[in-house]
Amino acid sequence: VQDALEAKQKEEQRIAHLGVIKDAKDQIFNSAFDGVVGNPTGKVTIVEFYDYNCGFCKRAIDDMKALTKTDPDLRFVLKEFPILGPDSQKASVVSMAFHLMHPEKYGEFHNALLGGQGRATEAAAMKVALSLGADEAALREKMKDPTINEALAKTYDLANKLAITGTPSYVVGNEVVFGALGQEVLAEKIEAAKAAL
Image (cartoon, rainbow, N blue to C red; front, side, top):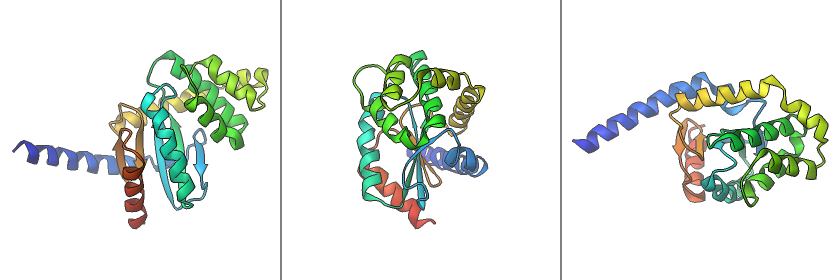
């Protein structure tokens, strides 16, 4: 009985997610504030909700690199979801401001900050941005742009609707996938999304 109840709840959640994904399609897959790696015009999009201080996200960075390297049709969207305290939030503001100014270098920025040692903070994010040629005064000015905090608020709202409470979490096609599941499982989800096209 318990298994049947769980299966029913999972199916209800899946149907609810389908509705949210359909209604918020542009915000999920095409927000101007999200970085894109892999093929920007790829047939299949995977969206990762991540926090720069999430240990599992740090480990999952290799999955992202491997998947985008082996699948030329994959568009990988990076959605800032800072949930692990003020340091994460401040690092995300630097990151989003950097992305608005230097979208072509965002993948490099993301890999350096997420793959770096120690805690991601505003100072750590700024150091990475400056190493990639950002002008500090201009970047600090861009960080004050109110649309950045508005975009973060929309992401929190979206995550709430999709029942995403932890990082990393993914949207692959019409499915929400929770946790660092590894490259193989994500590749299977991507193949399923391709088959549904």
